[in-house]
Length: 254
Image (cartoon, rainbow, N blue to C red; front, side, top):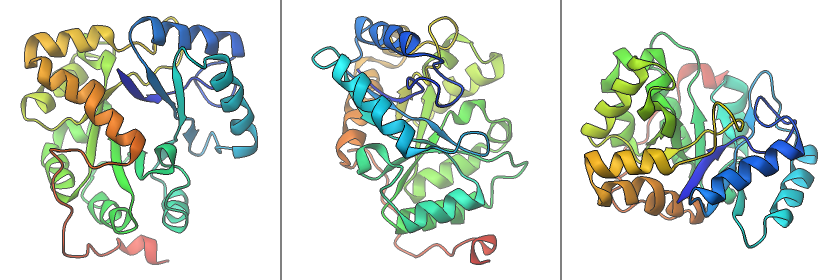
């Protein structure tokens, strides 16, 4: 399995707090069947994504686990105004392996309608937004039609593995199931932060999805689609991006 969302780098954000914990997290992931994992440090108001700090930690862990589990680098990218401008200026800087897929964390908005034009502009720049854990975003829970529009425009959805087990509450669990029932999920990832509570393990969710939605669906969400994200290939079931240019939302023109 391929895990495209994790916080395994030590001391970078609210994930692993030490190299020892990072090592334990990676061992847990490998032992549960994960062959590739993407380190996605936050870039938001609390965590600046300092490349000079991130790069040597990433290299050290990659070397430690060579032949055990393969590490890749991305970013858990908060869609703030400043960050959006930076992504538009450097389209490959924060994407997975620099190949185009951007793990995109929604801002705290009561209405999500404005985000459609933002996603349209990112797509025009060659960035494929992967909306992280929509099932855990309160606004999404009441505005499911927005997700359908984003997917039609060319975005993808990533659900957290533990959401299927109720880790984030019954409402998030129910929405994760609804999204999968309606074929609105493209990736399942761990969003692993530690070794006790939010663990970097996919197997339990893979087994659950296999039983309820079938092995073919589970393989797509945990293996085939995430592998495509590593290489920048389009997902086979991908909707076509909009041909008509989507206008940039007015606040981005400032």
